[in-house]
Length: 153
Image (tube, rainbow, N blue to C red; front, side):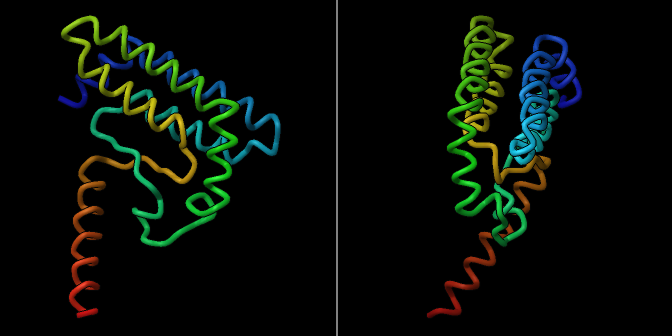
């Protein structure tokens, strides 16, 4: 089902938003100081091409340790990103979501666009994994948190 969803998504408009992410990424790389944002653009652009069966999660949640993109610098980077590109990519995804929502068959695509719009607002510190891996990480983190809580008592 994911393959069919991704194929239809790509053909019916996902390619345009993915390319838009990549174009923003190229501009970010050209500035040299924008390389971290450009890297995030290419990761999220790939996700935008084929979003079904994948999920964007925090790298800190995935690896259980902070890195430069998930800390204070990542937060500052997301603020800068929001001002220069994030809001515009998010508006593009919301516009595409509204268009998709007008048809009954496009509702799942609309939901994906809204997820991507949320990611477009703050992509620094996130990575894309399969839905199964994201669920497994969340279950593992929840069980390790329970162990920590029990040990504190």
